[in-house]
Length: 255
Image 1: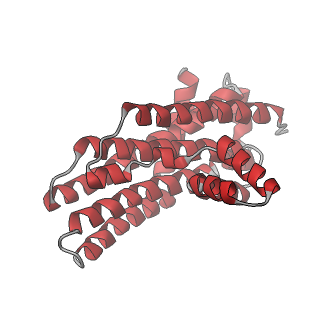
Image 2: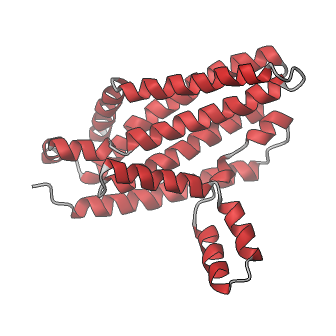
């Protein structure tokens, strides 16, 4: 366990020195600032507009951090050959990958907390905040980001960063289009397309399960089943992707 935390600590330190991190953080704050400007156009709906776009800023900021930083997380070590130094010590390949995940995961949690705090202060001044729904929505965005990080690490063990980024972004987009794919597949007269579409929609992770944005805006109740389902999906895919990543990483020869 100590070896995992050493890898995680070094990874966190390295990421905190990365300019990409601060660029994405500023981008998220810029989206929140834009939501304030758009909110001025509709005084009656200002709080809802700021809340809506602010939650999108959290989702996009943390998600892009997972994709663009996570895509080169493992490959950087392979390219620099520093992975050989790490693996020559009592650090297994599984512990190396878990340490990398924890290192960037801690940074994502920190960014999520910072953006959420800024957003909470803003919407508190604009009206009543449904705090329970707000916290659940931010945790949902965090789950989604950590899922994307698992995907990025999975592809990162055998793909170059550019391809890892493309694959992870594709899964991100498709994950939010699963409901539409399921609907149009059911309506399709083509039996082959219908079978493929329904098969993908059943197997592929539905990232809309992590989205509780509407509950925050309208104050709708969030059932414990929805939260449990989101957590269960994240845990299941984390385990699947971790096992697959470790198995592929074990097969690689760096010498």
